[in-house]
Amino acid sequence: MKKIQMVDLKGQYEHIKDTVNTSILNVLDTTAFVNGPEVHSFQKELEDYLGVKHVIPCANGTDALQIAMMGLGLEQGDEVITADFTFAATVEVIALLKLTPVLVDVNPSDFNIDINAIKKAITPKTKAIVPVHLFGRCANMDEIMALAKEHNLYVIEDNAQAIGANYTHKDGTKTKAGAIGHVASTSFFPSKNLGCYGDGGAIFTNNDDLAHTIRGIVNHGMYERYHHDVVGVNSRLDSIQAAVLRAKLPHLDTYNAKRQDAARQYTAALKDHKYIDVPKGKCNGVDTICDTCDCHVFHQYTIKITNGRRDELVKHLNEQGIPCGVYYPIPLHKQKAYQDDRYNEADFPVTNQLIQEVMSLPMHTELENDQIEFITTTIKEFLND
Ligand SMILES: *Cc1c(COP(=O)(O)O)cnc(C)c1O
Image (cartoon, rainbow, N blue to C red):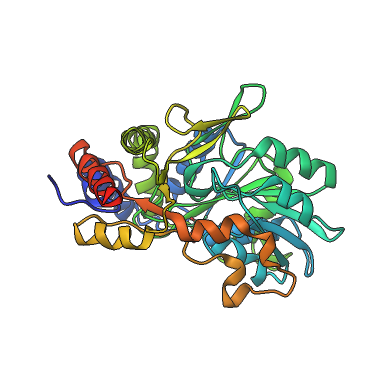
């Protein structure tokens, strides 16, 4: 059996080495390092793939979120609702822009923002909702968009973990994650489902005016050379990263299918264990185990250990040469930087429990059957002790 890794970027690179190397060398030959033709071509190819009108590349996923919020013209004191159970980047940019983050609880099954918690948190100052498609599975976008419409709010999808996922609407039609809200952000950090070999990110929108505004913001607020109409930032995807992404984009569906295959094998082995909850979610309104549909692209394969032995299990797996992670160990509302008197522990029962129960197993495009077999057997043997 090959050594088990949490993410295997080297193994993936080996399969596409020739294409990637040629693409990178081509950029070196043209010396168009910034805003070169590779960036433009990648932008067009990603627009086609996602079925979204505008992709605006930028430097990373955190910038993408910040720029999306700047583009919407949100102002100091505006309240932005997001999930308590996510990576800190989401709340960080809200705070940086002097907007007011309002953290709310998530669902126990799919770990995504809870629609009822959003409803409770809406005030006259609320301007936007940021659903995070956590671990690769879309939040409940039909209900979120309907609620946003009712209260005249913007929806910014944080799609850093779910690129390529298909969201199935109530009527059965499908839309790619990131093409549903008013604007969306993604990250091309190497370990993400579509990762480059450095930092990268992008903003998506179907709104022509917003796309125009954002194209200026990423470029120092310039709409005409040396005319700075708004306060902007400098956030660019470099051409070498775009070349890598162009080489990888045609493989994204296959990569996600490989993650789904691995997830299916994990789920088959673990779903009947009394102390393990496997990934679940609502599909067309019905609670389903995520092993048959394409709405989950498994950025992480995250299970819950319900007998209180999660930490012991993590330690045991590490000792057996099985890397695994706890995403995320601390709720955002308890982080020093984001504590606020407005929060009441009673409003976060799910997040407070998830942080004690969740663990993410190795997940990448190169996992092999015998590795998954070893991982699941080791987990079950430990829990049965
Ligand atoms: C990775 C990630 C980000 C940030 O992306 P970077 O490219 O690392 O800045 C934002 N939100 C979520 C949910 C992420 O997983």
